[in-house]
Image 1 (cartoon, rainbow, N blue to C red):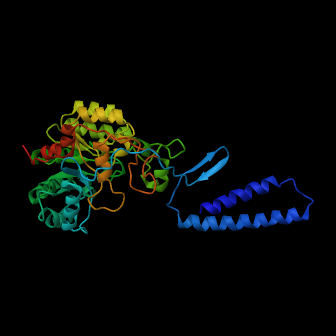
Image 2 (cartoon, rainbow, N blue to C red; image 1 turned 180 degrees about the vertical axis):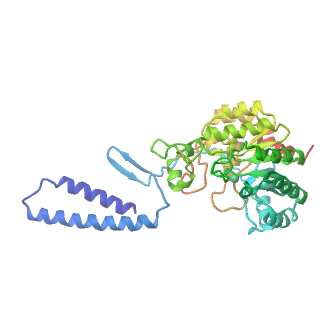
Image 3 (cartoon, rainbow, N blue to C red; image 1 turned 60 degrees about the vertical axis):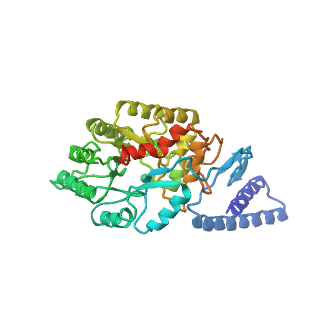
Length: 402
Ligand SMILES: [Zn+2]
């Protein structure tokens, strides 16, 4: 496609250069040829463009020269190889996988990656949850842990709270170890009034209390990266990502403000001190670690996971390192992947990030940056901190260790 675009641009500039020409027949013929070439190149570029709609690459102007598909390769020489294994066993508290996977496959991949246990946050509810528990938890309850979800479609039922409390109790009795709340709550879930249901809606209060009573941590995903709530324009730091996933943009009047959603979540955490909350993706505020630090100071029942936010942490290594050391008892390892997932694998990148002092490396194993257009820097966390973030905090939160 690049070749065709270059042809197109060249033709365009040629035509512009020849625009004063009127007399010379040969030159005129030459111009017509260029025009035909230009049209053919345009059609081919459109065909190619349709075929490659989801492939977006960098294009830069450098002194008037258009550089397409720019993919600079760092010439920095690394002093040590990427670690394949973590220094301590891992508990990944943030994975998603379906019933289609085999537990034996997961265990094999976990062993290869040094992973002790994983939590599947997509356990579901009802029959799906029962199947999930049957297939995975019964296979290996210590290593394949399932969190359940809630059925928000019942929000208009007069006994919604009671139904959900009962669903949680039943899930716990069958082996679910925690509750995962997806980001739809506070963002897109509506009730019969047509209003978006707030995270701190009182109908949920008995559910949060029940989770605390049962000792089930609530891993809650509220809002999303800052960029997803900003206009998708040339100033947006995740513009390329939002071009690939326009449905991830929550900018505009159809959605609540990001700050509103975060505030609702914070009020829930404050109102239920006996329930343990894990803010997914560094509480979805990895862009502002000072703010999330203040929340951790205010709410002893709040923890955060690092899933999918190594890109954010790794571009601010000084601040991130201080943050993780200061809050070493409140941070849990997570990836938002599962061991053996072929698309954008993360484990080895995460080990490199937390363990080494490597500089300026990719936060992704993918042909292009999946989130922001930047590189990351390793944090070389002290061993005692690594141990806690890798598994000790998760063991405490899940009640696996006293
Ligand atoms: Zn997730």
